Image (cartoon, rainbow, N blue to C red; front, side, top):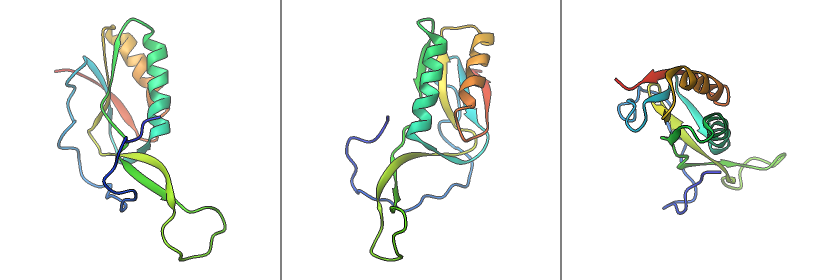
Length: 135
């Protein structure tokens, strides 16, 4: 799964989820993309599950670009631990997704195949998404 090699700080504050994406909001590398329509935290496990679906669908026909990376650490205290005694250990990493962000891009296949692949991939993500073309 994806995670940063090195971080400046081990634990981070919770990030805000609001606002629309002002960058990463157009298809840059491929021909077709999967664009989010709402704000959400996407974990590294969800990104990996989506990547597996897309690579299996593409086989050797197309190329896949992953545009999101989980940089933000999320901490979790173990079960039945009393209040206090500091912040929990880092449990997993997330990518803070905003509405309008292009999460994955595909090239080298037809539009119908790409549309089908994006629909299958969208089921693996907690965020509502749509199919976009390069304009």
